[in-house]
Length: 419
Figure 1: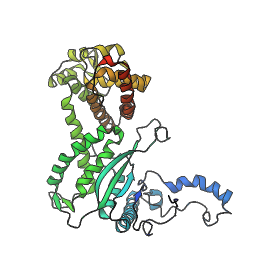
Figure 2: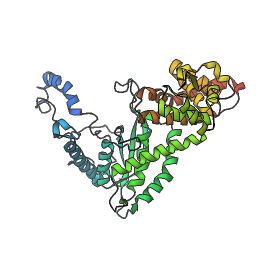
Figure 3: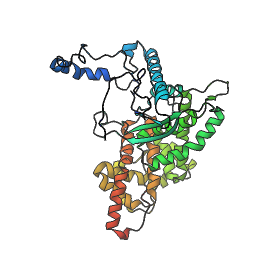
Figure 4: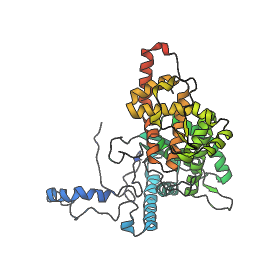
């Protein structure tokens, strides 16, 4: 095969993509300022080899003004930085739309985490909004989304955080000139029809909970971009930001609907956790909620989910779930999940595999609950509580592998659904 080569060119004005299959990893809005990061190395390299490569090291520091990032320090304020990024990215995407080989899709890697929120259900990200605006304005529609496990768990930005584990690959093609117009109601109907199977596919593919909201943007925007435009009730175009808000709302609705498969005690625990985490709450509130969910405080104590004393109630922490209680005949989804979390956090994947093999058909419901709890923690900004749930799902394939090995060694355990 032929060798590779690299050129330093302006993607907004050069012909580097002409008649080529293009796969690109663009800058992530204001996530990393690459030129500033490069200065650490540039200054020393300039001293060491500047005389050998004078055409590269002719400036005192790396050029920054033209870099396609949303830098407030360069462009004055947030709005000007956003305009610069949107204009520049639109030019780049338009160039790719015109020049790239028409027979093949454009693939774009993007790993920007949604972080902004206006209330519990109004999450959207300026980074995603501005990037998608540029893609759509250039005449692309999104035909697919592929989460790629691209980020190592040991990289510095990941240590001790709920950082993304995946890059989301958007598969784009040119939008047909006869693309239809839709009302907001039609758009939402298609979202509600297409997002549930897409979400199920992502969960079965073991997408990390921290990546789920980003991954669902793909199939959600695939619906939005198949239309020339979506018109709201006022006759105005539904913006990308508004579409992202709707995608996130419907994602929350779908995750909430999965609760219908859980037992009464687990549904109670889910609501209590949303309100109180693992902290204490009033016994009266717990009793009132338990009646609504078809259980009782005594039943919750008996199910080994709560501790009740002195007029206060709290959920057991994962560290309080003991191995011997795995033999209990009453195994709720909540308890099953937190046994897995406790084993994984304390003794790793092999210990979690032992627990996995004892849970039988509860394991798939436990994984669904894990996604739901991570989503609640992220929305409530409880990073420390969220982390064990994310780490468990990330380790799920290895836990399944070890569980299968152990079940082959001990065939008397019987058959089970290993997810």
